[in-house]
Structure formats: C-alpha cells, structure tokens
Length: 399
Image (cartoon, rainbow, N blue to C red):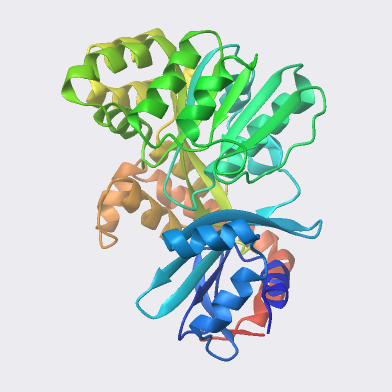
C-alpha cells in the first residue's frame, strides 16, 4: 500500500480527511464521521515512508528538526491535500485534509446574499470564523472566486499552506505561502502594503501583531479577509480583542469599530438526504450601531443586534438552523445537536428547550414539512443509500 492508493481511496469515497497513526488502520472522515479502512495496521515506518514520498528534501529536514510540519500537495488535477505531519508516543502520524481542485461558487455553498455584498466592498475587514473543519477556507475560496470573476482587483493571499489555487481572471491573484514564499504572516502583511493590493486574505490571524497589521490594512483602504477560531460571531469580537494586553485593548477596540464590515461564523451540518454536509452561517454586519457597541465595549449586546438586524442581512445561528430545518435540508436530531453546540450546551439538552430556542412549535411544523418532502423524493433517498453501501454497518470501509 502506498500513499497514492490511499489518496485515491479518499477521493473515491468523498472523504474530507485521512488519518494515519502508527499501530492503527488508516481512518477516513466521511460526512463528519470517522470510519476505519479495512487493511493492515500501519507502522511508524510505513507512515514516515509515505510522507517522505510526497515531501521535498527541505520539508523532510524541517520535519525531522521540528517534529511537526504543515504543507500541501497536489493529487494530479483532481484535488489538493493540506497535510500535517507530527509525532506521537507511538511514532509518526499525519492528517491529510482534502482540498477540491474545483473552486466552489457562492451558489454551490448556498451562502447568504449578504456575503456577496461583503465580497464587493472597497475596504474594511471581514472575519470568517468557526472550528477546525467548519468550512472557513471553502467559504473564503468562494468569496475570492466571486471577486476574480466579477471585479478588476489585485488580490493577495497569505496562507499556511496555500489551499485553493485561483487562476487570474478579471482580477490579478497572487498567492504567498508562509515558509515558502515569505517568512511568516506578519512579515508578509508588512510588505503587502507596498504591493498595491485591493484585497488581502490572511489565512489565519494567530497573534496580536498579525491582527494589528490586518486592522491597519483595513483602515488604510484595503479589503481584508481573515479567519479566527471562534464558535459565534459575537464571541469572535471578544476573542480578537482578548489577544491583546490590557493597555492596548481600547486602541484595538477602536480600530475594530472603525473597520469591521462583518463576521461570518459557520459550522457544517449533516444533510438529511445523506448527500454530505451543508454550511450553516451566523452573520454579524458592521452597521453603525454594531460599531458603537464594539467601541463602548458592549459586546454581549451584539447577539440582540443580530436577532433584530435581519434587514441588514444579519442572522443568528438559531435562525440559520431553523431555516435549514424548515426546508428539509437537516432533520430534527441534527438541528438539536448543532444548536446544543452553538449554545455551548450539552447534547442531552431537553427537547423542549431546543424547541423553544428554535421558535417553539415551528420546529414541529418544520419536521412535518421535511417528512412530506422526504416522501416525495424517495427515489433520491434510495440513490443516497446505494452510494453509501460501500461502508459496512460497523462503520468500516473495505480497501
């Protein structure tokens, strides 16, 4: 078995991730669920050999020195993979994250209409947030793709590693990879201001200097997209400000208040028809009222602003979940699960509490609508079951 065979298997089964760990069978993640591949257990030497076959000489040296390495590889013209190689107590391990070669459109992802408006702004900062594997990079790729197809702009991306490659269309797009094309995020951002960009994508806003430089770029006439790890739009603001020491918080709060255009907090949910996963989006728009609340450090009130700001395109995670449930895209069980996570609640949350959060009796009505839709599309459901038949009942895949 070699890595090419495993990656082909990942593509065939539409897995989002491949996990390699010494002493274990390969494991793939399909529709958010981990499934073992029926083959022999891998040794540390097996995994290291696979990794070294796709690493450059410099990458091998860096991995041996640091014992961790992020890099990306291409799999023909079908896909790219973001790879993290690391060591465990049992030896070498790695995770391969699938990056499709076909860049999705906003319509493919069913992004809210306000996201398109955010992509065409002239300046300010738009933050895309969510947990690991929540689809942030895919949303960003769709936004950059929209700009590329419709706007004549210079787009500069700074990523670690570069995930989606965009071929310049109406826009000029330059990709810079940390560790390959630039030393780090902050160095690339400093030089970016001298490279005449209209749009700057910062793959990850990891430290206070990177965040400060991104806000400065947003204040000086550039449109900046950045990502953070946060579960909700209003918590994103707290998390960003909390990176800074107390003496700098007021200054950063003022910079953010003057430049924030929006926050998109997202997660992925399992589709009721079994056809993969769908995105669910919480949207905070940087209106004058929102900016005033940030400036005055009234962050908890941002949630109420989203609840009443639908005319601006704002929506809470609960609103988004209810919409997916009503349209039959997700079922009641999935709605309950995702809402519990969104509310930092336990999965054993009482059904009545969840129903109240989703608008009381409307969740029952949405469930009835979903069942009716399922009955009218039984043929499609049968096809979904047939496509999933390669997985055994115990959640294993035959290799």
